[in-house]
Length: 150
Image 1 (cartoon, rainbow, N blue to C red):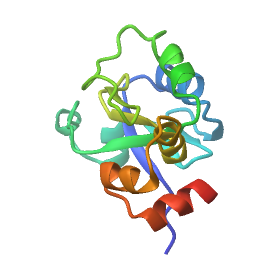
Image 2: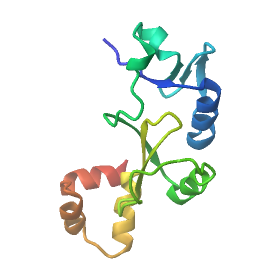
Image 3: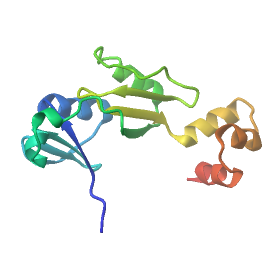
């Protein structure tokens, strides 16, 4: 068996396609009109009720039971791109490990975090030891070293 991706329900396939292309630099792998798959495996489906054969009223908006995760090397540039979408609803403020969570156009939770390597390097630049970082992040020293060497 092979994992092939994640499908989310969207109201407007064109608006959602534009959102994910512009904000996350995703590239379309397959485009079937009301179903689009990006090269990362994420798929958007308009008319989700039709796809899974259930009543439209049973499609829940803002279910808060999953999140789509991305890592970003240039977190500040991402926040600037995100600011172009004033309708975005944030779940909380950016936290110390440089993570932001917000709802996409269809109220799916999105998490964008600074890569772990960037987080570790920022803590090192602040003068923290590997042991201090290990304790702060609840990650073994061995795993920190692996992340730094990737």
